[in-house]
Image 1 (cartoon, helix red, strand yellow):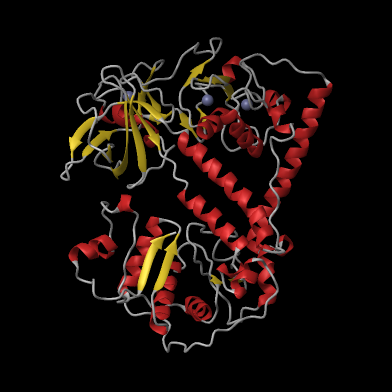
Image 2 (cartoon, protein in one colour):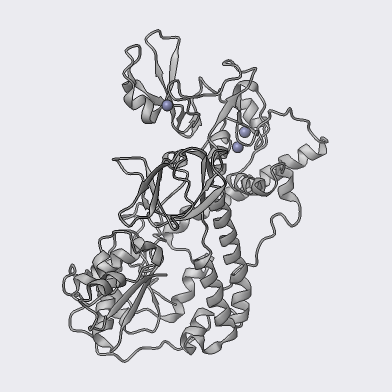
Length: 551
Ligand SMILES: [Zn+2]
Ligand SMILES: [Zn+2]
Ligand SMILES: [Zn+2]
Protein backbone atom coordinates (compact mmCIF):
# COMPACT_ATOMS: atom_id res chain seq x y z
CA UNK A 1 0.00 0.00 0.00
CA UNK A 2 1.22 3.47 -0.75
CA UNK A 3 1.00 5.70 2.21
CA UNK A 4 1.51 9.41 2.19
CA UNK A 5 3.55 9.23 5.30
CA UNK A 6 5.53 12.24 4.27
CA UNK A 7 2.31 13.98 5.28
CA UNK A 8 3.47 14.59 8.83
CA UNK A 9 0.99 15.54 11.49
CA UNK A 10 1.79 19.01 12.60
CA UNK A 11 1.25 17.87 16.12
CA UNK A 12 2.52 20.91 17.97
CA UNK A 13 0.35 23.48 16.26
CA UNK A 14 -2.77 22.13 14.61
CA UNK A 15 -3.74 19.11 16.64
CA UNK A 16 -2.43 19.89 20.08
CA UNK A 17 -0.10 16.92 20.07
CA UNK A 18 -2.90 14.40 20.01
CA UNK A 19 -2.80 11.79 17.28
CA UNK A 20 -6.26 11.80 15.77
CA UNK A 21 -7.05 8.87 13.55
CA UNK A 22 -10.45 8.82 11.99
CA UNK A 23 -10.84 5.09 11.56
CA UNK A 24 -14.40 5.18 10.32
CA UNK A 25 -13.35 6.20 6.86
CA UNK A 26 -11.26 4.18 4.51
CA UNK A 27 -9.73 7.14 2.75
CA UNK A 28 -7.64 9.72 4.51
CA UNK A 29 -5.78 12.88 3.72
CA UNK A 30 -3.81 15.33 5.78
CA UNK A 31 -1.65 18.42 5.59
CA UNK A 32 1.59 18.20 3.74
CA UNK A 33 4.59 20.46 3.82
CA UNK A 34 6.07 20.76 0.38
CA UNK A 35 5.70 18.52 -2.60
CA UNK A 36 7.77 15.54 -1.48
CA UNK A 37 7.31 12.56 -3.78
CA UNK A 38 6.10 9.36 -2.14
CA UNK A 39 8.89 6.83 -2.22
CA UNK A 40 8.53 3.18 -1.42
CA UNK A 41 11.55 3.15 0.87
CA UNK A 42 9.50 5.08 3.41
CA UNK A 43 6.55 2.77 3.31
CA UNK A 44 7.56 0.59 6.20
CA UNK A 45 7.99 3.61 8.45
CA UNK A 46 4.32 3.60 9.37
CA UNK A 47 4.54 0.01 10.52
CA UNK A 48 7.84 0.37 12.28
CA UNK A 49 7.30 1.02 15.98
CA UNK A 50 10.69 2.73 16.31
CA UNK A 51 9.72 5.37 13.76
CA UNK A 52 6.62 6.64 15.45
CA UNK A 53 5.33 10.00 14.24
CA UNK A 54 5.66 12.68 16.86
CA UNK A 55 1.91 12.71 17.42
CA UNK A 56 2.13 9.20 18.81
CA UNK A 57 4.58 9.99 21.55
CA UNK A 58 1.82 10.35 24.10
CA UNK A 59 0.62 6.86 23.36
CA UNK A 60 4.09 5.46 23.80
CA UNK A 61 4.43 7.01 27.21
CA UNK A 62 1.09 5.60 28.15
CA UNK A 63 2.21 2.14 27.17
CA UNK A 64 5.29 2.23 29.32
CA UNK A 65 3.22 3.38 32.29
CA UNK A 66 0.86 0.50 31.77
CA UNK A 67 3.83 -1.82 31.67
CA UNK A 68 4.95 -0.76 35.11
CA UNK A 69 1.41 -1.01 36.49
CA UNK A 70 1.29 -4.61 35.31
CA UNK A 71 4.59 -5.30 37.02
CA UNK A 72 3.38 -3.73 40.26
CA UNK A 73 0.25 -5.75 40.03
CA UNK A 74 2.20 -8.97 39.51
CA UNK A 75 4.31 -8.15 42.54
CA UNK A 76 1.19 -7.59 44.67
CA UNK A 77 -0.30 -10.85 43.41
CA UNK A 78 2.92 -12.67 44.28
CA UNK A 79 2.81 -11.18 47.77
CA UNK A 80 -0.77 -12.31 48.19
CA UNK A 81 0.11 -15.79 47.04
CA UNK A 82 3.01 -15.96 49.46
CA UNK A 83 0.80 -14.95 52.32
CA UNK A 84 -1.45 -17.84 51.42
CA UNK A 85 -4.92 -17.29 50.04
CA UNK A 86 -6.34 -14.18 51.57
CA UNK A 87 -9.95 -14.79 52.50
CA UNK A 88 -12.04 -11.84 51.49
CA UNK A 89 -15.68 -11.49 52.59
CA UNK A 90 -18.36 -12.14 49.90
CA UNK A 91 -18.98 -8.42 49.52
CA UNK A 92 -15.38 -7.63 48.55
CA UNK A 93 -14.95 -5.69 45.29
CA UNK A 94 -14.49 -8.28 42.53
CA UNK A 95 -11.78 -6.11 41.01
CA UNK A 96 -9.71 -4.83 43.90
CA UNK A 97 -10.92 -6.62 47.05
CA UNK A 98 -11.96 -3.49 48.99
CA UNK A 99 -14.74 -4.59 51.39
CA UNK A 100 -15.76 -1.67 53.57
CA UNK A 101 -19.62 -2.02 53.58
CA UNK A 102 -20.01 1.74 53.13
CA UNK A 103 -17.88 1.70 49.97
CA UNK A 104 -19.29 -1.26 48.05
CA UNK A 105 -22.50 -1.96 46.15
CA UNK A 106 -23.86 -5.15 44.66
CA UNK A 107 -24.81 -5.38 41.00
CA UNK A 108 -28.38 -6.69 40.99
CA UNK A 109 -27.94 -8.41 37.64
CA UNK A 110 -24.87 -10.58 38.31
CA UNK A 111 -24.80 -10.37 42.15
CA UNK A 112 -21.15 -9.33 42.18
CA UNK A 113 -19.88 -6.60 44.52
CA UNK A 114 -17.80 -3.61 43.43
CA UNK A 115 -16.35 -0.62 45.21
CA UNK A 116 -16.68 3.05 44.42
CA UNK A 117 -12.93 3.71 44.04
CA UNK A 118 -11.24 4.46 40.76
CA UNK A 119 -8.01 2.62 41.43
CA UNK A 120 -5.92 3.01 38.28
CA UNK A 121 -8.85 3.72 36.01
CA UNK A 122 -10.84 6.82 35.12
CA UNK A 123 -14.17 5.40 36.33
CA UNK A 124 -14.96 3.87 39.72
CA UNK A 125 -14.94 0.06 39.83
CA UNK A 126 -18.72 -0.23 40.10
CA UNK A 127 -19.26 2.17 37.18
CA UNK A 128 -16.60 0.34 35.15
CA UNK A 129 -18.44 -2.91 35.75
CA UNK A 130 -21.92 -1.57 34.95
CA UNK A 131 -20.69 -0.05 31.71
CA UNK A 132 -18.63 -3.05 30.59
CA UNK A 133 -21.28 -5.65 31.54
CA UNK A 134 -24.17 -3.41 30.46
CA UNK A 135 -25.84 -3.90 33.85
CA UNK A 136 -27.56 -0.98 35.50
CA UNK A 137 -29.21 -1.87 38.81
CA UNK A 138 -27.49 -1.96 42.19
CA UNK A 139 -28.20 -2.47 45.89
CA UNK A 140 -26.29 -0.96 48.83
CA UNK A 141 -24.80 -3.06 51.64
CA UNK A 142 -27.01 -3.77 54.68
CA UNK A 143 -24.32 -2.30 56.93
CA UNK A 144 -23.85 0.85 54.86
CA UNK A 145 -25.11 4.15 56.32
CA UNK A 146 -28.21 4.04 54.10
CA UNK A 147 -28.86 0.33 54.73
CA UNK A 148 -29.82 -2.33 52.20
CA UNK A 149 -31.52 -0.11 49.64
CA UNK A 150 -31.85 -0.12 45.90
CA UNK A 151 -31.84 3.34 44.33
CA UNK A 152 -35.04 3.67 42.34
CA UNK A 153 -37.26 6.36 40.90
CA UNK A 154 -39.76 7.65 43.48
CA UNK A 155 -42.31 8.11 40.75
CA UNK A 156 -42.01 5.20 38.28
CA UNK A 157 -39.79 2.73 40.12
CA UNK A 158 -37.06 2.63 37.42
CA UNK A 159 -33.79 1.30 38.89
CA UNK A 160 -31.52 2.33 36.02
CA UNK A 161 -28.72 4.10 37.90
CA UNK A 162 -27.57 5.82 34.71
CA UNK A 163 -30.93 7.57 34.53
CA UNK A 164 -31.43 8.26 38.24
CA UNK A 165 -30.76 11.50 39.97
CA UNK A 166 -31.82 13.31 43.11
CA UNK A 167 -33.58 16.49 44.03
CA UNK A 168 -33.11 17.96 47.50
CA UNK A 169 -36.54 18.26 49.09
CA UNK A 170 -37.59 21.43 50.89
CA UNK A 171 -36.86 19.80 54.24
CA UNK A 172 -33.13 19.52 53.79
CA UNK A 173 -32.52 16.11 55.37
CA UNK A 174 -34.44 14.29 52.64
CA UNK A 175 -33.67 13.81 48.97
CA UNK A 176 -35.99 12.48 46.32
CA UNK A 177 -34.72 10.07 43.67
CA UNK A 178 -36.24 10.56 40.24
CA UNK A 179 -35.31 9.31 36.80
CA UNK A 180 -34.23 11.99 34.35
CA UNK A 181 -36.79 10.94 31.75
CA UNK A 182 -39.67 11.19 32.10
CA UNK A 183 -40.23 11.70 35.82
CA UNK A 184 -37.90 14.62 36.64
CA UNK A 185 -38.90 16.37 33.43
CA UNK A 186 -42.63 16.24 34.15
CA UNK A 187 -42.51 16.56 37.93
CA UNK A 188 -44.83 19.30 39.15
CA UNK A 189 -44.59 18.51 42.86
CA UNK A 190 -44.38 21.70 44.86
CA UNK A 191 -42.27 20.18 47.66
CA UNK A 192 -39.22 20.04 45.41
CA UNK A 193 -37.69 21.95 42.54
CA UNK A 194 -37.04 19.72 39.49
CA UNK A 195 -34.48 22.20 38.18
CA UNK A 196 -32.17 21.08 40.99
CA UNK A 197 -32.08 17.50 39.66
CA UNK A 198 -28.52 16.07 39.64
CA UNK A 199 -27.40 12.58 38.53
CA UNK A 200 -26.40 9.86 41.02
CA UNK A 201 -23.36 9.04 38.91
CA UNK A 202 -21.11 12.01 38.46
CA UNK A 203 -17.69 12.01 36.83
CA UNK A 204 -17.98 8.23 36.43
CA UNK A 205 -18.42 7.36 40.09
CA UNK A 206 -21.35 7.25 42.50
CA UNK A 207 -21.96 10.38 44.57
CA UNK A 208 -20.03 10.09 47.82
CA UNK A 209 -23.11 10.49 50.07
CA UNK A 210 -24.56 7.39 48.42
CA UNK A 211 -21.46 5.18 48.27
CA UNK A 212 -18.45 6.35 50.25
CA UNK A 213 -15.18 6.37 48.29
CA UNK A 214 -12.66 4.09 50.09
CA UNK A 215 -9.92 5.84 52.07
CA UNK A 216 -6.47 6.25 50.60
CA UNK A 217 -5.07 3.58 52.93
CA UNK A 218 -7.76 1.12 51.88
CA UNK A 219 -6.97 1.86 48.25
CA UNK A 220 -3.25 1.39 48.75
CA UNK A 221 -3.78 -1.98 50.42
CA UNK A 222 -6.15 -3.20 47.72
CA UNK A 223 -5.28 -5.14 44.56
CA UNK A 224 -4.04 -2.75 41.88
CA UNK A 225 -6.01 -3.78 38.83
CA UNK A 226 -5.39 -2.17 35.44
CA UNK A 227 -8.01 -1.17 32.91
CA UNK A 228 -6.78 -3.96 30.60
CA UNK A 229 -7.19 -6.55 33.37
CA UNK A 230 -10.71 -5.27 34.09
CA UNK A 231 -11.60 -5.71 30.44
CA UNK A 232 -10.17 -9.21 30.30
CA UNK A 233 -11.95 -10.19 33.51
CA UNK A 234 -15.28 -8.86 32.21
CA UNK A 235 -14.74 -10.83 28.99
CA UNK A 236 -14.04 -13.94 31.03
CA UNK A 237 -17.25 -13.46 33.04
CA UNK A 238 -19.32 -13.71 29.88
CA UNK A 239 -18.26 -17.35 29.65
CA UNK A 240 -17.68 -18.16 33.32
CA UNK A 241 -19.45 -16.00 35.88
CA UNK A 242 -17.30 -17.38 38.71
CA UNK A 243 -13.96 -16.47 37.15
CA UNK A 244 -11.53 -14.47 39.30
CA UNK A 245 -8.50 -12.32 38.64
CA UNK A 246 -6.28 -15.35 39.26
CA UNK A 247 -7.95 -17.13 36.31
CA UNK A 248 -6.41 -14.54 34.02
CA UNK A 249 -3.05 -16.12 34.82
CA UNK A 250 -4.08 -19.60 33.76
CA UNK A 251 -2.69 -20.88 30.47
CA UNK A 252 -5.12 -20.87 27.57
CA UNK A 253 -7.24 -18.05 28.96
CA UNK A 254 -5.26 -15.32 27.35
CA UNK A 255 -3.43 -17.08 24.54
CA UNK A 256 -2.11 -14.26 22.47
CA UNK A 257 -2.78 -14.67 18.77
CA UNK A 258 0.23 -14.59 16.47
CA UNK A 259 1.56 -11.09 15.91
CA UNK A 260 1.13 -9.51 12.54
CA UNK A 261 4.29 -9.07 10.46
CA UNK A 262 5.75 -6.39 8.25
CA UNK A 263 6.42 -8.95 5.53
CA UNK A 264 4.75 -12.27 4.74
CA UNK A 265 6.24 -15.24 2.91
CA UNK A 266 3.08 -15.83 0.94
CA UNK A 267 -0.68 -15.38 1.08
CA UNK A 268 -1.04 -18.58 3.15
CA UNK A 269 1.00 -17.14 5.96
CA UNK A 270 -0.99 -13.91 5.66
CA UNK A 271 -4.26 -15.79 6.00
CA UNK A 272 -2.89 -17.91 8.87
CA UNK A 273 -2.21 -14.78 10.89
CA UNK A 274 -5.17 -12.61 9.93
CA UNK A 275 -7.79 -15.39 9.87
CA UNK A 276 -7.74 -15.94 13.68
CA UNK A 277 -7.70 -12.17 14.32
CA UNK A 278 -10.83 -11.65 12.24
CA UNK A 279 -12.42 -14.61 14.08
CA UNK A 280 -11.68 -12.99 17.48
CA UNK A 281 -13.21 -9.75 16.29
CA UNK A 282 -16.30 -11.54 14.98
CA UNK A 283 -16.73 -13.51 18.24
CA UNK A 284 -16.48 -10.33 20.28
CA UNK A 285 -18.96 -8.50 18.08
CA UNK A 286 -21.39 -11.44 18.30
CA UNK A 287 -21.15 -11.70 22.10
CA UNK A 288 -21.71 -7.97 22.41
CA UNK A 289 -24.80 -8.01 20.18
CA UNK A 290 -26.27 -11.12 21.76
CA UNK A 291 -25.84 -9.84 25.30
CA UNK A 292 -28.22 -7.00 24.48
CA UNK A 293 -31.47 -8.98 24.79
CA UNK A 294 -34.22 -7.04 26.53
CA UNK A 295 -37.22 -8.55 28.25
CA UNK A 296 -40.51 -7.19 29.64
CA UNK A 297 -41.17 -5.06 26.60
CA UNK A 298 -44.62 -3.55 26.09
CA UNK A 299 -45.61 -3.31 22.44
CA UNK A 300 -48.04 -1.01 20.66
CA UNK A 301 -49.17 -2.70 17.44
CA UNK A 302 -49.73 -0.86 14.21
CA UNK A 303 -50.32 -1.68 10.57
CA UNK A 304 -48.05 0.04 8.04
CA UNK A 305 -49.23 1.50 4.73
CA UNK A 306 -47.73 -1.58 3.07
CA UNK A 307 -49.98 -3.76 5.28
CA UNK A 308 -47.00 -4.97 7.31
CA UNK A 309 -47.23 -5.26 11.10
CA UNK A 310 -45.20 -2.64 12.94
CA UNK A 311 -44.29 -3.06 16.62
CA UNK A 312 -43.73 0.18 18.56
CA UNK A 313 -41.86 -0.03 21.86
CA UNK A 314 -39.22 1.59 24.07
CA UNK A 315 -35.84 0.03 24.88
CA UNK A 316 -34.53 1.38 28.21
CA UNK A 317 -30.99 0.28 27.29
CA UNK A 318 -31.05 2.73 24.41
CA UNK A 319 -31.76 5.60 26.77
CA UNK A 320 -28.73 4.80 28.85
CA UNK A 321 -26.58 4.74 25.71
CA UNK A 322 -25.55 1.10 26.13
CA UNK A 323 -26.93 0.01 22.80
CA UNK A 324 -26.64 1.64 19.45
CA UNK A 325 -29.43 1.13 16.99
CA UNK A 326 -29.73 2.39 13.44
CA UNK A 327 -32.59 2.30 10.99
CA UNK A 328 -32.31 -0.91 8.99
CA UNK A 329 -30.86 -2.97 11.87
CA UNK A 330 -32.53 -6.31 12.49
CA UNK A 331 -34.24 -7.28 15.74
CA UNK A 332 -36.00 -10.50 16.71
CA UNK A 333 -39.19 -10.07 18.74
CA UNK A 334 -40.36 -12.94 20.95
CA UNK A 335 -43.52 -13.39 22.93
CA UNK A 336 -42.65 -14.78 26.36
CA UNK A 337 -45.98 -14.32 28.15
CA UNK A 338 -48.69 -16.84 28.99
CA UNK A 339 -51.82 -15.46 27.31
CA UNK A 340 -50.83 -16.29 23.77
CA UNK A 341 -48.90 -19.23 22.38
CA UNK A 342 -45.18 -18.75 21.83
CA UNK A 343 -44.17 -16.61 18.85
CA UNK A 344 -41.09 -15.02 17.37
CA UNK A 345 -40.47 -12.96 14.29
CA UNK A 346 -37.67 -10.94 12.70
CA UNK A 347 -38.07 -7.38 11.53
CA UNK A 348 -36.04 -4.32 10.72
CA UNK A 349 -35.96 -1.00 12.49
CA UNK A 350 -37.83 1.72 10.61
CA UNK A 351 -37.61 4.40 13.31
CA UNK A 352 -35.12 5.04 16.12
CA UNK A 353 -35.74 7.32 19.12
CA UNK A 354 -35.51 11.02 18.27
CA UNK A 355 -36.41 14.20 20.09
CA UNK A 356 -40.08 13.74 19.24
CA UNK A 357 -40.52 10.22 20.62
CA UNK A 358 -38.48 7.52 22.38
CA UNK A 359 -40.28 4.80 20.49
CA UNK A 360 -38.64 2.33 18.17
CA UNK A 361 -40.56 1.13 15.13
CA UNK A 362 -39.94 -2.43 13.99
CA UNK A 363 -41.50 -3.62 10.75
CA UNK A 364 -41.99 -7.38 10.90
CA UNK A 365 -41.07 -9.47 7.92
CA UNK A 366 -44.11 -11.77 8.22
CA UNK A 367 -47.58 -10.68 9.18
CA UNK A 368 -49.01 -14.18 9.79
CA UNK A 369 -49.21 -15.31 13.39
CA UNK A 370 -48.18 -11.99 14.93
CA UNK A 371 -49.88 -11.85 18.37
CA UNK A 372 -51.13 -8.30 17.86
CA UNK A 373 -53.95 -8.81 20.38
CA UNK A 374 -51.43 -8.87 23.26
CA UNK A 375 -49.19 -5.98 24.24
CA UNK A 376 -47.13 -7.21 27.17
CA UNK A 377 -44.52 -9.90 27.77
CA UNK A 378 -42.31 -9.37 24.72
CA UNK A 379 -38.54 -9.67 24.43
CA UNK A 380 -36.21 -8.26 21.78
CA UNK A 381 -32.91 -9.80 20.64
CA UNK A 382 -30.36 -8.13 18.44
CA UNK A 383 -29.72 -10.23 15.36
CA UNK A 384 -26.02 -10.56 14.72
CA UNK A 385 -25.02 -10.82 11.10
CA UNK A 386 -21.78 -12.51 10.16
CA UNK A 387 -21.86 -11.26 6.56
CA UNK A 388 -19.02 -8.74 6.74
CA UNK A 389 -16.78 -11.14 8.68
CA UNK A 390 -17.61 -14.05 6.34
CA UNK A 391 -16.63 -11.86 3.41
CA UNK A 392 -13.30 -11.00 5.00
CA UNK A 393 -12.53 -14.68 5.63
CA UNK A 394 -13.59 -15.64 2.11
CA UNK A 395 -11.45 -12.90 0.58
CA UNK A 396 -8.41 -14.07 2.55
CA UNK A 397 -9.03 -17.68 1.56
CA UNK A 398 -9.31 -16.69 -2.10
CA UNK A 399 -6.15 -14.64 -1.73
CA UNK A 400 -4.36 -17.66 -0.20
CA UNK A 401 -5.36 -20.32 -2.72
CA UNK A 402 -5.44 -18.25 -5.88
CA UNK A 403 -2.39 -16.12 -6.61
CA UNK A 404 -4.17 -14.66 -9.58
CA UNK A 405 -7.09 -13.37 -7.52
CA UNK A 406 -5.34 -9.99 -7.42
CA UNK A 407 -2.76 -8.43 -9.72
CA UNK A 408 0.85 -9.41 -9.14
CA UNK A 409 1.61 -5.90 -7.99
CA UNK A 410 -1.16 -5.84 -5.39
CA UNK A 411 -0.32 -9.42 -4.29
CA UNK A 412 3.26 -8.50 -3.40
CA UNK A 413 2.28 -5.11 -2.06
CA UNK A 414 -0.19 -6.64 0.44
CA UNK A 415 2.46 -9.09 1.59
CA UNK A 416 4.93 -6.27 2.19
CA UNK A 417 7.42 -7.34 -0.47
CA UNK A 418 9.96 -4.93 -1.95
CA UNK A 419 8.66 -3.73 -5.30
CA UNK A 420 9.67 -1.38 -8.04
CA UNK A 421 7.31 1.59 -7.80
CA UNK A 422 4.77 1.38 -10.57
CA UNK A 423 3.64 4.56 -12.22
CA UNK A 424 0.55 4.31 -14.36
CA UNK A 425 0.90 6.09 -17.65
CA UNK A 426 -2.21 8.17 -17.59
CA UNK A 427 -3.25 11.43 -19.14
CA UNK A 428 -3.49 13.70 -16.11
CA UNK A 429 -6.52 15.99 -15.95
CA UNK A 430 -5.81 19.71 -16.35
CA UNK A 431 -7.77 20.55 -13.22
CA UNK A 432 -7.80 18.30 -10.16
CA UNK A 433 -10.88 19.84 -8.58
CA UNK A 434 -14.12 18.28 -9.80
CA UNK A 435 -17.15 20.25 -11.00
CA UNK A 436 -19.83 20.79 -8.33
CA UNK A 437 -17.38 20.22 -5.46
CA UNK A 438 -15.35 22.69 -3.38
CA UNK A 439 -11.92 23.67 -4.77
CA UNK A 440 -9.24 21.30 -3.50
CA UNK A 441 -6.45 22.65 -1.33
CA UNK A 442 -2.81 21.83 -1.94
CA UNK A 443 -2.65 18.55 -0.02
CA UNK A 444 -5.96 17.32 -1.40
CA UNK A 445 -4.79 18.07 -4.92
CA UNK A 446 -1.55 16.24 -4.24
CA UNK A 447 -3.53 13.23 -2.99
CA UNK A 448 -5.72 13.16 -6.11
CA UNK A 449 -2.68 13.41 -8.39
CA UNK A 450 -0.80 10.61 -6.59
CA UNK A 451 -3.78 8.26 -6.51
CA UNK A 452 -4.43 8.63 -10.24
CA UNK A 453 -0.88 7.49 -11.02
CA UNK A 454 -0.72 4.42 -8.79
CA UNK A 455 -2.37 1.02 -8.70
CA UNK A 456 -3.06 1.21 -4.94
CA UNK A 457 -2.96 4.10 -2.45
CA UNK A 458 -3.80 4.90 1.14
CA UNK A 459 -4.83 8.44 2.07
CA UNK A 460 -5.13 9.23 5.73
CA UNK A 461 -5.96 12.26 7.80
CA UNK A 462 -7.91 13.54 10.79
CA UNK A 463 -11.64 14.30 10.56
CA UNK A 464 -12.50 17.46 8.69
CA UNK A 465 -9.56 17.37 6.28
CA UNK A 466 -11.81 16.70 3.31
CA UNK A 467 -11.33 13.00 2.68
CA UNK A 468 -14.82 12.62 1.22
CA UNK A 469 -14.43 15.51 -1.23
CA UNK A 470 -10.97 14.21 -2.21
CA UNK A 471 -12.40 10.72 -2.75
CA UNK A 472 -15.30 12.02 -4.81
CA UNK A 473 -12.87 14.05 -6.96
CA UNK A 474 -10.79 10.89 -7.52
CA UNK A 475 -13.88 8.93 -8.55
CA UNK A 476 -14.81 11.75 -10.94
CA UNK A 477 -11.40 11.65 -12.67
CA UNK A 478 -11.26 7.83 -12.76
CA UNK A 479 -14.66 7.79 -14.46
CA UNK A 480 -13.57 10.42 -16.98
CA UNK A 481 -10.14 8.89 -17.65
CA UNK A 482 -11.18 5.27 -18.18
CA UNK A 483 -13.96 3.62 -20.10
CA UNK A 484 -16.25 1.56 -17.86
CA UNK A 485 -17.56 2.07 -14.36
CA UNK A 486 -16.03 2.77 -10.97
CA UNK A 487 -17.03 0.68 -7.95
CA UNK A 488 -16.96 2.76 -4.75
CA UNK A 489 -17.00 1.04 -1.33
CA UNK A 490 -16.98 2.40 2.23
CA UNK A 491 -17.21 0.66 5.61
CA UNK A 492 -20.63 2.02 6.64
CA UNK A 493 -23.90 2.93 5.01
CA UNK A 494 -23.60 6.50 6.27
CA UNK A 495 -20.18 6.86 4.64
CA UNK A 496 -21.48 5.42 1.36
CA UNK A 497 -24.43 7.84 1.38
CA UNK A 498 -22.11 10.80 1.91
CA UNK A 499 -19.84 9.68 -0.93
CA UNK A 500 -22.84 9.08 -3.19
CA UNK A 501 -24.04 12.62 -2.55
CA UNK A 502 -20.66 14.14 -3.39
CA UNK A 503 -20.16 12.02 -6.51
CA UNK A 504 -23.65 12.94 -7.66
CA UNK A 505 -22.72 16.61 -7.23
CA UNK A 506 -19.97 16.23 -9.86
CA UNK A 507 -22.63 15.36 -12.43
CA UNK A 508 -21.61 11.71 -12.82
CA UNK A 509 -24.39 9.19 -13.24
CA UNK A 510 -24.47 7.32 -9.91
CA UNK A 511 -26.29 4.22 -8.75
CA UNK A 512 -26.39 3.60 -5.00
CA UNK A 513 -26.68 -0.11 -4.21
CA UNK A 514 -28.30 -1.05 -0.89
CA UNK A 515 -29.18 -4.22 0.95
CA UNK A 516 -32.73 -5.46 0.42
CA UNK A 517 -33.54 -4.77 4.08
CA UNK A 518 -32.63 -1.10 3.65
CA UNK A 519 -34.69 -0.43 0.55
CA UNK A 520 -37.65 0.89 2.53
CA UNK A 521 -35.51 3.39 4.42
CA UNK A 522 -35.36 7.00 3.50
CA UNK A 523 -32.02 8.73 2.97
CA UNK A 524 -30.68 11.86 1.35
CA UNK A 525 -29.67 9.81 -1.68
CA UNK A 526 -32.79 7.60 -1.89
CA UNK A 527 -33.44 8.87 -5.43
CA UNK A 528 -30.08 7.43 -6.54
CA UNK A 529 -30.68 3.89 -5.27
CA UNK A 530 -30.95 1.10 -7.79
CA UNK A 531 -34.48 0.08 -6.77
CA UNK A 532 -35.64 3.69 -6.95
CA UNK A 533 -34.13 4.25 -10.38
CA UNK A 534 -35.58 0.98 -11.68
CA UNK A 535 -38.99 1.91 -10.32
CA UNK A 536 -38.90 5.32 -12.00
CA UNK A 537 -37.13 3.93 -15.06
CA UNK A 538 -35.57 7.27 -15.85
CA UNK A 539 -32.00 6.09 -16.13
CA UNK A 540 -32.53 2.51 -17.26
CA UNK A 541 -30.98 3.10 -20.64
CA UNK A 542 -27.97 4.97 -19.35
CA UNK A 543 -24.86 3.22 -18.17
CA UNK A 544 -23.92 4.41 -14.71
CA UNK A 545 -20.39 5.64 -14.13
CA UNK A 546 -20.11 4.94 -10.42
CA UNK A 547 -21.62 2.28 -8.16
CA UNK A 548 -21.24 3.17 -4.47
CA UNK A 549 -21.94 0.20 -2.18
CA UNK A 550 -21.34 -0.58 1.44
CA UNK A 551 -18.35 -2.82 1.90
ZN1 LIG B 1 -12.72 -2.02 43.72
ZN1 LIG C 1 -23.19 -7.02 37.08
ZN1 LIG D 1 -39.15 7.56 36.90
